Image 1 (cartoon, one colour):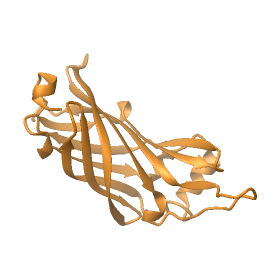
Image 2 (cartoon, rainbow, N blue to C red):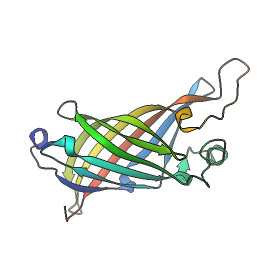
Image 3 (tube, rainbow, N blue to C red):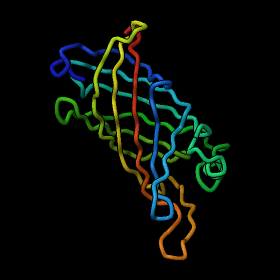
Image 4 (spheres, helix red, strand yellow):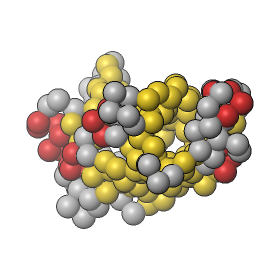
Length: 187
């Protein structure tokens, strides 16, 4: 994201493009397979400082009812009090607190993740994947971010034991995020 690695000053404020971004997650099911899902309704902004990436920041707001794992019955269970209690807690938020440049294209972004009114600090490994001027004349940047969290840290504890040992849903959840963001014309 820095000017020295891209040759272009990316400084400015960017809005996430939900049509070209994904807020995904992966959980292990029955100790044997991975279930993938995503939240389809979200918004967020990034402030990029191309001269000093450590001064960059971002925030994200996810509508919890937009969870989609491809199975309606599972999605309804995830919306219930067993997991997200979405009527009581309609949003998940993330607000960055620090940005550390690891190398030319890789960063560690630490921030506050709030789920069910519980806020915990998490660190995302973020890769800058490029910038482009799209056919509509928008300046875009791309980022990919991942981290692993323990859902119990946010009070999401429901589970069912398996006859063969283990549990139905893993505690570890991988967050897998792809971002396309459009630079505001005013900055």
